[in-house]
Length: 121
View 1 (tube, rainbow, N blue to C red):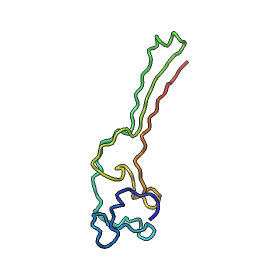
View 2 (spheres, one colour):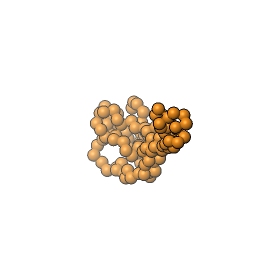
View 3 (spheres, rainbow, N blue to C red):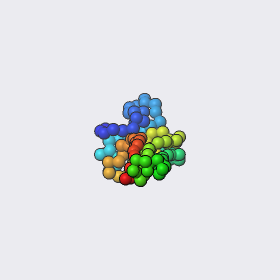
View 4 (cartoon, rainbow, N blue to C red):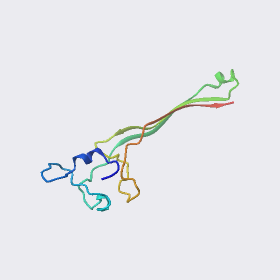
């Protein structure tokens, strides 16, 4: 087995006598990516997510006139800020059954924060 997999794969059945609820995992090259028709892993992907948000503040014009500016906006934005789900394992919004597109090894998206100023003269 090659490439990165989710940590749950460590609990898979490997040899007679193993006690687990995770079946044997075959090599992707030999078994059509373990995507046989089954409802075994069918679970709810309900979630509450705050994917992105931006907060900004425009300074009052009377303050800016003193320094010969027309506008000044201060802002902060973020992506992937919050995720609440009962689902364990792979990120609920991921498409892991997209054929051989290389999309099967899925990590949670990174949290991104951006801060900035927009100046108008």
